[in-house]
Image 1 (tube, one colour):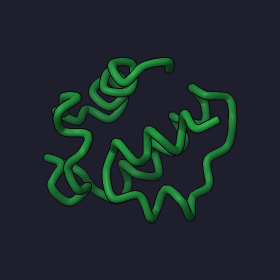
Image 2 (tube, helix red, strand yellow):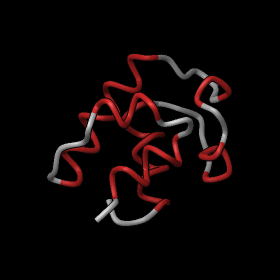
Image 3 (cartoon, helix red, strand yellow):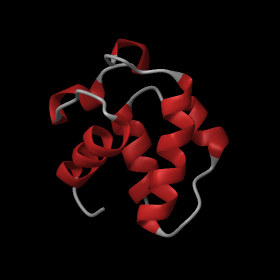
Image 4 (tube, helix red, strand yellow):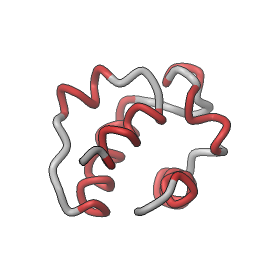
Length: 75
């Protein structure tokens, strides 16, 4: 996963979330079909895609999908 578009594709293909790049900044509770199981699954997918661990504590504090993306691609 190298781009925001790759991330949106991951959200659509792996989590079946009907999102676009414009939806990434919305609060998680405003994302259609979002639930806590998606968050755990997303963490696992991002760790697989990036090859590195994510801090679950940081992800739990993320207010949006955009914030989760930034955590995943942070240097």
